[in-house]
Length: 366
Image 1 (cartoon, rainbow, N blue to C red):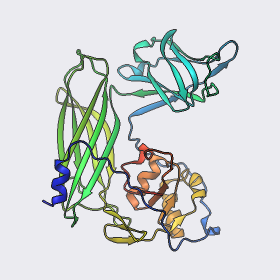
Image 2: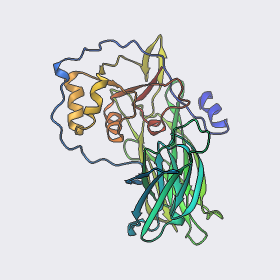
Image 3: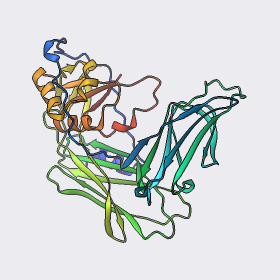
């Protein structure tokens, strides 16, 4: 085994890798022309959403007076039984109190970051009322307000965070694969025995990792479970723009040893990405991306998969510069077809956006 692999396997804790690169001087970047025009819009193909969440936008009623408040009402749906119901508040600013069905669930000060509250134990079988109340009397630097609210319906066991990191050896003959799962479990002592099964398959569908971990019944209502798996993959199939080889991770929930359902299915790639004299090198091949006009991406994401691929092929593009996260369907498409997504690292952003961290097509640049 390569000495680099031995060192990584013996290291304690989970190694998190974020790829940061200098801004590249890309050659062969064509100017925008009439050939950049987009085809007529057609309905996008259906695509699988990795997170098993259902999000329902709520209508907010704004009331002013002695106190500023936003309220909303919603009906409990029978299909929610057995699931966890959260409310996500976006653009929350200033000191607030949050009530659900007249119960004070939380209070604090919003800083515009999204916040979530678990409403499950406090819901009625019929109409439910949620209210956010702001206090004008405090000396807050934020102008109080709320942009929008949504219900998020999650399974009793759901994935909060997934990290897949790969560490190729010096000769690329073996790769250390590390998988780190952060799972939230809402199980009680009355629940039957449940366990999680993790399967990682190669491009031919052959499993290279099969692990099973028990979910013990928690004493508390909410349990956080962190699972980590290390595996050496011999002679890995490497991902590159010319050969976009993908592996597949599947996470299943088992109940009393029987399959209950799939919590997550995610593709990922193994790449050796380096910088040599400000030139991008992937798996020892020099890459000179031909970048599509980033201003077209918002319109392009509304097209079908076939139209997006046709646009890149017809114009000779192999990459796109995108400062904002792209829809999961589009990122899946780029992963499968070897189209690079170059995204600038924001100076004040401590970590990259978490939604695309496992994407082989995503390259962070400075």
